[in-house]
Image (tube, rainbow, N blue to C red):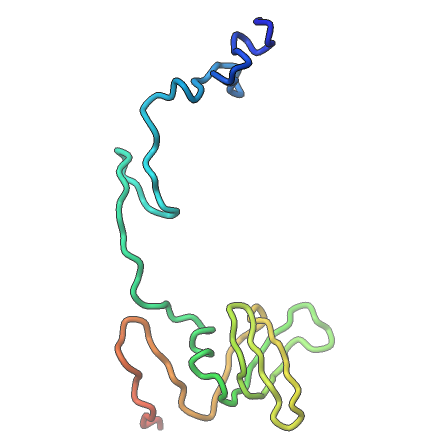
Length: 149
């Protein structure tokens, strides 16, 4: 072993030890050049080329987006709470005030009380008025009324 105790590697940082005890090339002796600059998530070809893709031009249809389009509307929200002996399921009615990725905030018109509800427990919601719904990839809104029988 060398005086450095690194199997022939010098203290200048010209090499390093791999987990199997084999020396690897340091910064001075890099083989093959530097790897290409790739943005996170960009696919690469087997030859090392970067495949350029364009981002979608529309947002996907998630429940929080539907709720955000319908803020201010009164709805009934159904939730299930597993492993809860006192109340397994609860129903809340109120004005939809805010919607995030993992929660909604509703308020009770009579009391003014605001409730933060987690979407992990959300089952479904009903509304007594038409909803605004923008489906991804379509232009404009669908008709506001329908002949539902």
